[in-house]
Image (tube, rainbow, N blue to C red; front, side):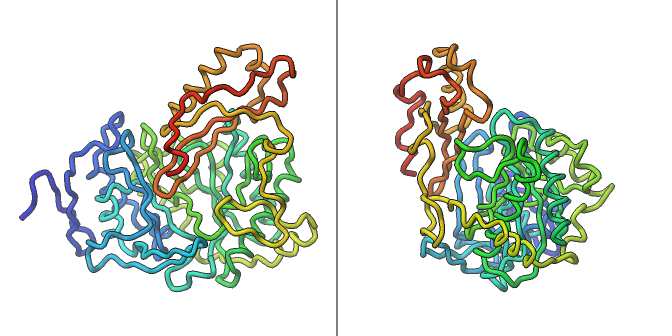
Length: 411
């Protein structure tokens, strides 16, 4: 018997129960849990091209985008027998059985769990050690305009073409852009990351005023080409993912001819199914275009710069430079605040600006360091300020954090 408030979707011969179907997950846009499930059914073929057949980390918003969310690597023990899973080992030494969606019904079932985004690993469930995807994540520093992200995307396209690879662009659904590259399942995670690092450095060399490959935020300017998204255990919101924004923007696959004029807000849960019916999946041909990483790996050797820093929870690698933030070595960086929510952290920064207007007017966009800090199950936001452009006599001292949600640092 159907429970009160639930709806049953018939999807590909499966009945998927959507509990509390009328729950608002996006209050401003008035989008319900049932709307999210129906959206993923409508774009299922394209969404599965990006996330299907791969282990997926679940990012759950059970009470909508205004409530708490959490990361869940382990598949729920209570699940339909038609939802596939695979056991994945992580660099930490732990392992987890993760969900592997293979059909539209699985996407609807994930939506019922409050999963707005799809977060697949870059491997197929049948071969967990050899990625078939290199991911170029273009992440603008605060203050960088969207036009600059598009400019760097086109530089990356040219750099990829020069080494015989085809990039498939998409909006991230937020401030950045992703370019996916299908590759043969021949190289290890470390080799794919090394190739991505070579590409990032090449893009920076081609466009040093707008792109950077620097890992430490204090050293970045413009758009960061995040090579570390190719390290094992990293996931990125895949094509058609619904992002936790008030308008329910989505990660939209693009044709390169659309990149120069697109805007992130052009693509939402409400209008993407119409676009999908009209133009189809812009990444429909991606699986037929797997390329070789050998030219990028050869470029890495020619660049002669060696490795670059890994994220902090990874083991130390041979040839990796010191994993010490520049701010702890030489740059005058102060911490402003820590908060559970992005908006609260930035509000603390605005209060700091009002207290120190003379210092604030000397700051450049890249001097404001906004870090999304991921704990084991949740994220929190840290704001720091690099005072390198502020005259020494005007540099404020470190103050008590505002806001100061201390417990979050150990999450």
